[in-house]
Length: 386
Ligand code: ZL4
Ligand code: CA
Ligand code: ZN
Image 1: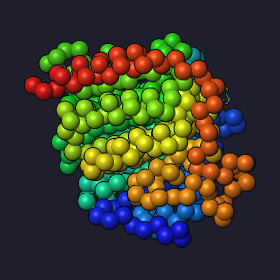
Image 2 (image 1 turned 90 degrees about the vertical axis):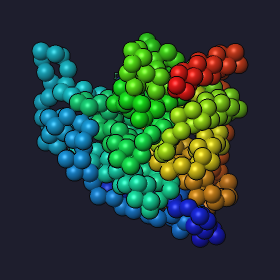
Image 3 (image 1 turned 180 degrees about the vertical axis):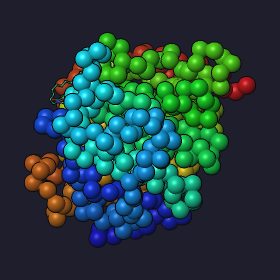
């Protein structure tokens, strides 16, 4: 390998089941499980597997999925096939919000139980003290609801993993840097103070999915509810750039950790917040995206690192491979190793850090706007002291 060694004083575990990488959502669907193969190939080509404990987790059982999801929804996912007619003429919808965004494809249940199994395995390695940083790039599917699919997500592996962490931890901080709002996780823990959710996302109620996550959506309005002020949202406009994004992330995350004092952190690293993403609209480069991971790592708390969105597979794979290297604290050469499988797939860009901030989206985030967002978050955090 490239001299990559196990980190000193802590353990990183990597949870990946290659069985799910072969799945297909259907022609032209933006979600490509194959991006996980590309990620793992880069991770291995650098020799990073030598520095981590590698696990091939079993699928989650239906009982485990029902710890969050409603039984009839899980039973539906388990038995439905692409040829079933799930159209309901009365409501003019497909069952459980399946359809174009969340199609029923061959192997769907296997896919869902595998990514959820990997997140549960990762969370258990953290609570067992067998790992300090546990990584599952196949997880992070933050839109799934208790009884329906949403936004390419069927099972909410994040909620399941946090429920596992809550068996041992009094307070869990959830941070979400996917370009979309982490609505499913926010909703699941809306009424509790044992989880603080914090999502950074593009926000436009009418035009950008899922349309929730305004700055003033911070938990139940009734101040007597324990969940009040424990859902935090950082709504952003198109085109945010590296320096702005890093500063904003640090200016928000640092006071959250100081005030809330989590005993574990879950970080959803959706890579659709990168520049050049097929669905995203930011101008963030891979180093800046990774700087968020590096910043969170510095708190030295048990850390669950998850994937999420990311629709330009070559960039997703580079970002998540780089972020794996940050977790193990290894310096990697910026050029992809010559023996990386599928190297031809990367065209001329054989570097981990292609330039992604070619302003396809003009930056609509002024300094004044971002300052007002930080102020809004600080205002919420002041309620936590008492
Ligand atoms: C597609 O080309 O904004 C799905 C989805 C399938 C193939 C063929 C069908 C063509 C873009 C998206 C018709 C597709 C119509 N195919 C999809 C309101 C919408 C209703 C559905 O990163 N149409 C819904 C969901 C978002 C909507 C984003 C992000 C997940 C995550 C975590 C989920 N849904 C409008 C869209 C295509 C498709 C092309 C698509 N869907 C883009 N944005 C959405 O946060 C993993
Ligand atoms: Ca987000
Ligand atoms: Zn997304």
